[in-house]
Image (cartoon, rainbow, N blue to C red):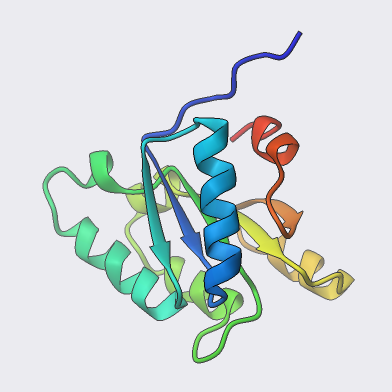
Length: 137
């Protein structure tokens, strides 16, 4: 018996590879876990987006529940994003759960990601229907 997946108000995908974003978007849509998907091809634009949302009175209704974050990106990588994310408001950090979504098999990346309280899970690309259905965030 397959239990229905948890529903989220919104999800954010951050990956410099547009094809990976498209695949992951399609997987999230197919799993029907959210109606709103924010897509960013750069960590810097994503962090600016979150900072701007924090200024809204309805921030808690607009902030993504889950952020799928790639590690290896130009300009600002996933860990630099996490460093900036840590500077955001406490309410933002409590609301947004981060899932590292990467093709990196480097054990150091896994260990490094565990140092961030906001990182709840470490998954290998691409997202699969099973990995989405198994999300317990």
